[in-house]
Amino acid sequence: MAYTVYDAVVEVLDELNYLNLAFENDLISEAALARFINPRVAARLGDNTALGDNATLLPTPPTLSTVTVAVRGYLKTKPFNKTPSAELVKLLSSSKVFLQTGLAEVHAVQTPENYDKITMLAKNTRWSADDPFYVIPQANSISVVASAETMQEIMAAIPKNDVLHANEERALITIAYDPSKAFECAGSFHFYTSQFANLGVSIILAFSSYDRISFLVKEADSSRAFKKITASIKGISKIHV
Image (cartoon, rainbow, N blue to C red):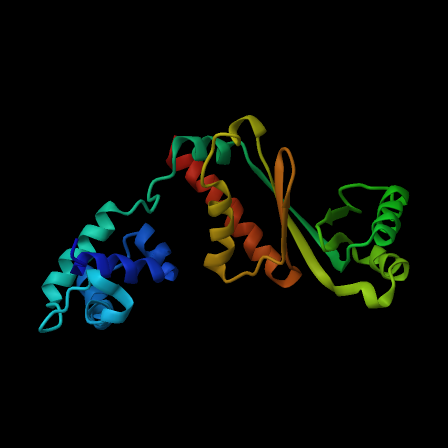
């Protein structure tokens, strides 16, 4: 089967995933997008090496109108989740957002000794919402999120050479939800992370449990991220009923 202009357009646009937010919200002019990608599409169609035996070499670059038609077809057939699913709306309607500030993060090499020391500190800490102590073990590392006051105890318990990274001035944004509505809901993680991405806020660490998911961010970014996510959840819950 011959390699077509549409095939080239699909490949080019699939690589430009930073445009997905604009696609989702119909912010893209088809003609402007066609002009932008036309040189890349022409290069794909003219690259015999990259395309192999299926390449269709064009005597001239594809016309702008041809690329525009292909762009229109791509935007119509690609599922960009412009309308949240009923399952996602139900999940968001059950959600509550919480903000914890004054936290710190420590990441260390995962060893039996370090794990034992950290879990012992966690057992001896009077855990509460105001004084949390989260331990997230992985195969090669172990991460701890706790109050800034507890950080020194953690650092003292772990050999200095085993500390991979440590930082204060962190905050945790936690979204609690009805777990019965989460098991068959696709897209919730994408929705949450896109809120941070839209604001340009980096997620330093993410972890979840049965009925909630938490995102560690810089404390300086936490207030606006908290307000954004809270407003987005409330807004979707009200609009899509």
